[in-house]
Image (cartoon, rainbow, N blue to C red):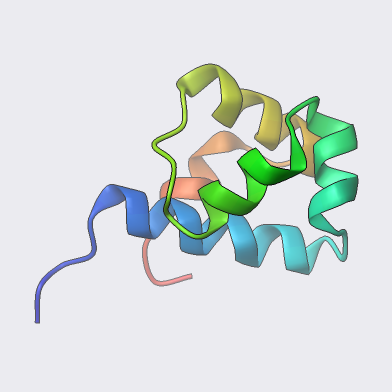
Length: 73
C-alpha cells in the first residue's frame, strides 16, 4: 500500500483535531482568522496551505502544530 502523502496526512489530522475540539469549521475560522471555505478546502486536501496558515490553525485549535503531521492518529 502506498504511504500517505503529507497533504493527505495533514488534511485528515486537521479534520480530526477540529472534531475532537468539538468546534465547527465556522468556529475555527473565527479563531484562526482564516475563511471558512479555506478551512473546508484544507480539510478535504484541496488546498496546499501555507506555513503561516498552519500556525494560525494550530493557535485556533490550541495545539502544537506538529500534531497536524503525525501519522497513525
